[in-house]
Every structure is written in structure tokens, then in C-alpha cells.
Image 1 (cartoon, protein in one colour):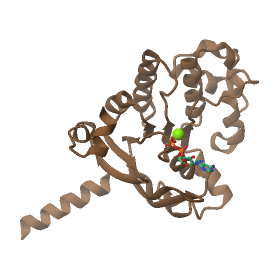
Image 2 (tube, rainbow, N blue to C red; image 1 turned 90 degrees about the vertical axis):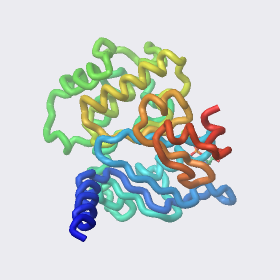
Image 3 (cartoon, rainbow, N blue to C red; image 1 turned 180 degrees about the vertical axis):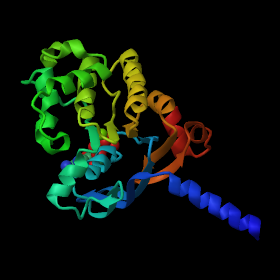
Length: 260
Ligand SMILES: Nc1ncnc2c1ncn2[C@@H]1O[C@H](COP(=O)(O)OP(=O)(O)O)[C@@H](O)[C@H]1O
Ligand SMILES: [Mg+2]
């Protein structure tokens, strides 16, 4: 009896010590007859790299857009660091957004702005987070340094390679010092070597900034290197969860299809 209680206590403590950064429950979203998300769940804990893998068109971007409030789900709850984003007012939501960095699919830099201006953009939009900053240059340089591109500060996006653009986009995400980073297909459209560099960078950033990351990908290499835990999004639900090795060893046909 004593032993049992002790066991339960230890288990409870273990769970409680891991802080829940994101929690999605029973998320549903359809477009007409296209039922994209049919009750998707996920939990992202502090300091963790969680990979969501799903085929093209399976609803990965839809899920992430619901998560950052760019799209409204039909039902379900989304909590960011314990706060339900579907019931927050605009101001609170805006503040919470500064805790989440979102690296869009593609790089989505502003073509007509220099690298520096691109990085200053989120600073201007979320002034309150840093009080009154008169000189943003130092913050811009720091963020660029963490992706190894301080010398591109005055260049235009068109002057950068695809991999460099992805790095600058990541620096723009980092400048607000988010607690959580969402990566939507961080390696898509890149050659394998550049993709590897981006993956390395993601790991380096997690070490330096102590972020928790949600990584959406259909790149098996990316998932293998980066994930501690994976969720397979199939038919709009979390079809399977586990480590890369566990999922790769599965006998389920739908799961096996991912690793071919
Ligand atoms: N704004 C939209 N209006 C209608 N259908 C959409 C919209 N956004 C996404 N979809 C549909 O939702 C499905 C999932 O899309 P998406 O999340 O972009 O897939 P992926 O997993 O490749 O990121 C697709 O069938 C897509 O056509
Ligand atoms: Mg997508």
C-alpha cells in the first residue's frame, strides 16, 4: 500500500514538473465537404522538439494556422501556456503571440524591405514587449548572429540564396525571444545540404534560446534528426505517436508508407 502510494506520488510529480506549453484538444476544421481535421490532439512540453508528420494536404498548415489564430477552428480547444486562445481578447492574444514564433512555409520575407527592416518589423508591431527601444540595431544584429548572417543586414531578400532567406526568416522569428517556435516545413524547397544546415540550426537555437518547438514536416530526414517525439497526422487525427524508432518499426501499413 505504502509502495503503491509512493509510486503514484512520484508519477504525479513527474508529470507536474513538465510544463505544458501547447495543448490542442479535439480540434476540428472542415471546408465544405472537405473534413481536414477530425479531432486532432497534441501536447507540447517545455524544452521539447515535437514533430508532426503528415502527407501533403493532410492539414498540417491548417492546424498550425488555427494554433496562431490565423484560422478559426470549427470546434476544439487550443491552449498556449495554459491560456485558451479561443476566448482571449485581442490585447491578451497579441501579447501571447509574442511568445510564439512562427516560421512560415517558404520564408515569407518582405521583398521590398532590407534584411534589417524585415527584422525590425515584429519589433515595431510588439513594442510593449521590450519597453521603449530607441536603437533596434543591436537586437537585429544579435538575432542575425544567432543564424550566422550578421553581414547580410543591409541586403535585400532577392540578394540571398534560398537557405539564407530561410535563416533570415528564422532570425525574424527569434527577435521577439519567443518561448515556443512553430516551424512549418522548415526544409521544404531546399537542397539536401542546405536542409541539413537548417536542421542543425534549429537544434542550435533550441539550445541557445531554450525554446520548445513544434516542427511540421514531411521530410523523414528532418524528423529523424530533430524529433524526440513524433505524431503522425493521418485522416485528420493523431493516428500514431512515439519516437522515430518506434514509429519506423511499426507494422501498420499507413505508418509504414511514411518511411518508404
Ligand atoms: N483557406 C482554405 N480554404 C479551403 N480549403 C483549404 C484552405 N486551406 C486549406 N484548405 C484545404 O485543407 C486541406 C489541408 O491543407 P494544408 O493544411 O495546407 O495541408 P498540408 O498538410 O500540406 O499543410 C487541403 O485539402 C486544402 O485544400
Ligand atoms: Mg503545409
